[in-house]
Length: 102
Image (cartoon, rainbow, N blue to C red):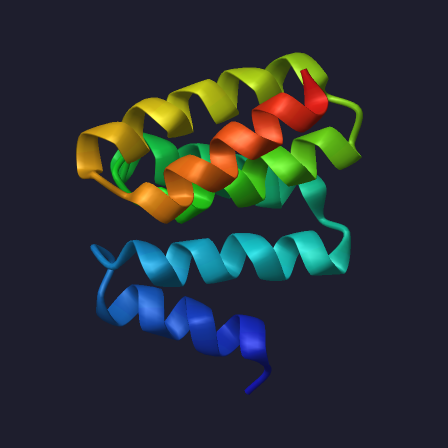
């Protein structure tokens, strides 16, 4: 079983664990399947908005794909969620990403 299939199996076993969805989105991104990756990142943000790691990773992928407007939107939403959750490290990283790119 390859890594992607393993992660899909993990999602089937525990669909409410955002980490596995996040890993799958990254696997798609590594393969260059950006539509699948971006669609999955969007699902994670919708289903698990407080899973703050998603915002930084997704925003970076969007920036690499020249989707600056969407990236800025995702960063700002991530900052809001990180503030709500009290995730200081994620908040700092998202603010730095915003400052460096906008």
